[in-house]
Amino acid sequence: MLAYLAKALASQGLNVLVTAFTHTAINNALRKLLPQVTGYYQGGKNWASASGLNYGGVKIRSTESIMNQGFSPSSKGAIVGATCYAIYTKKLEWMPFDVVIIDEAAQLNIPLAVGAMAKTKKFILIGDHMQLPPIISEKQVDKDLSCSVLNCCIAMPPG
Image 1 (cartoon, rainbow, N blue to C red):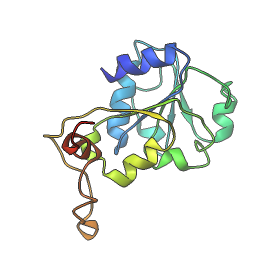
Image 2: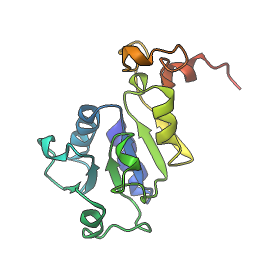
Image 3: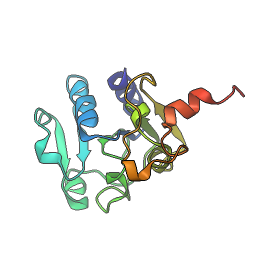
Image 4: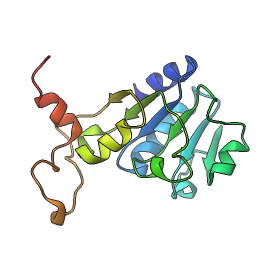
């Protein structure tokens, strides 16, 4: 579903950010896109460990590396995979996004999710609230912070 959504949104000229708590989740999502898109961008320091993501993809090593591929702030229809942390690095902070797709949203606590959602006015949460909870260290245990963004949305009353 994520791959279909990302492709459909990008084909409408929207810049799509695919994010998650882990690099593994992002890389898995990008792998599903491979047969469907001709190009995507992958940001983050672990770009070299993403095996199987060489077809059609541009590894974002720096702002210059993506601009050398012809992407600029006015470009449309890009799909970018990056963690919630990477989108605020110098490599990616300048990039405009129309939609953020958060994969495995049940693993993402609210502060990290809000950071990703702040990059755009539209976001899509994908996940299963019955699976793994947010990944937090024992020192950070706070009832409000240990709730995932997905669980908080489910718990909210309609309207």
